[in-house]
Length: 124
Length: 124
Image 1 (cartoon, each protein chain N blue to C red):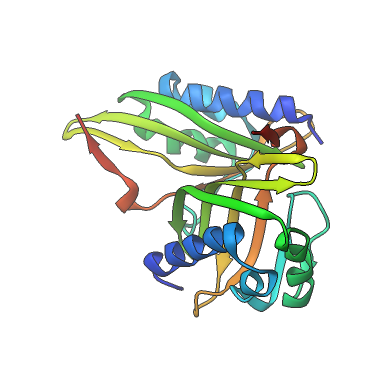
Image 2: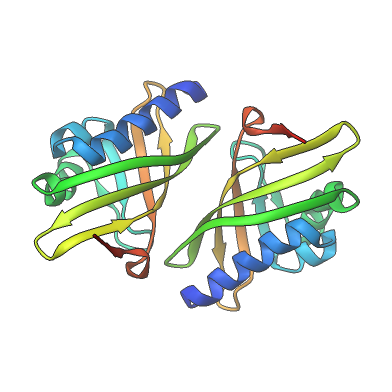
């Protein structure tokens, strides 16, 4: 089980990469056979390739992100963060709560994102 | 699957009961065979009886609680909240992130609490 400090560091790296990183950089934080369920209730994606493709949708958009709170427990973490994305239709902001599990090496083995469309707000 | 508005109402009732309710009142929000894992990584409890016993530890302590954020998705919710408890050794405050699942009737079928001892702070 990774140390809580390792888990918190990976979460901080993830939130930073969500704001400024490319899809490959974000996907590199995941284990090879990791799963991604975003939002919770959708069909999970599996594997770093599918995960990189998922993040490629935001890769070319200007973004900002901020970690609000992270709680590590066992091999897992839950964290609350903010991401603002500049889209062709204007800026949008959402503050999801994500849950991740981690392997011994501190790679993300699963990610589940809790949010719904009504949590997405227009931002100026 | 319960409506997101039902899920959010149950979460609000839960956080309120954590602040002011008795153990039976809190446990009544759970389904009969629900599970409770608090903190994540500990052995889960099962059943409303065991769950009521879990909450009886705080029943006679003066408490305050506040919901910081809730995100509903699918049959689940993640929420960030604050609870302050007056213990014989002074007041302590913690801001866990909990994840819950719900049945059709809006009863809690599982609860997992993400926090660690280092998240608990002395409060005055």
